[in-house]
Image 1: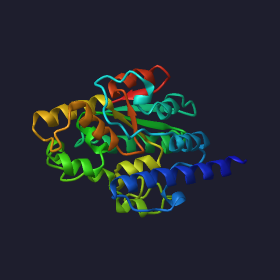
Image 2: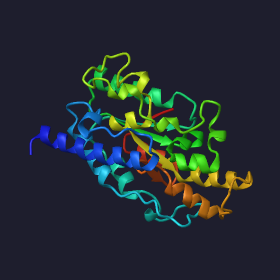
Image 3: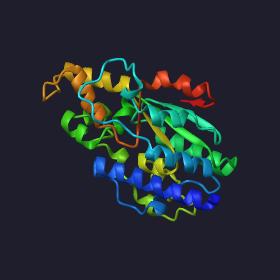
Length: 263
């Protein structure tokens, strides 16, 4: 198989898997043809193959209860996380993202643009270690509606709009200099970054603490126990994200294999 064909097949697989997952999970993303949806740079076969493997890796979203501390690998998305930790295809950066209303998506987009086109590193992998209020962006809209998560997200959000595709996504993907195109600030969204190979890590600790906070605030309509409410929230993390035992605890695992830390 030629490198070009391998890359094309990988993009098709990832585009279909990621696009379908987000669409079925949230009802917010537009259905876009797989190759048109992909924004991976040319000359990045390793990154394309990683996205293909991540699309195939299982995500567990069928918990009845979860403990406060995860002790077994079947309690998180171990296979997908191992693929990320094992990536050696190019330069790697992990972002410590905590504020949903902050510039985190824009900063990752800017980093990608500079690495890919300024420094000529098309295999550059960006990972978001997502926790704090930023983690709210990884929940499906059903959880926002059921538990009033917009109240915790700040004045900028009445819904989880960071999962919405933006009109810039439909712009010519071959023109990376377009000021209103798919690589500009007009396309700051989770789906757009995922199409560029960005990986979003979910934090079990953030999920557990949110569940505890909801119970304390009497925002628990089904009167679930803490471990059951944490399980429900986990089951509604977007399928394309990777649930980890904890974002902060996962950072050293990434740093010790060469990921550069950014905040």
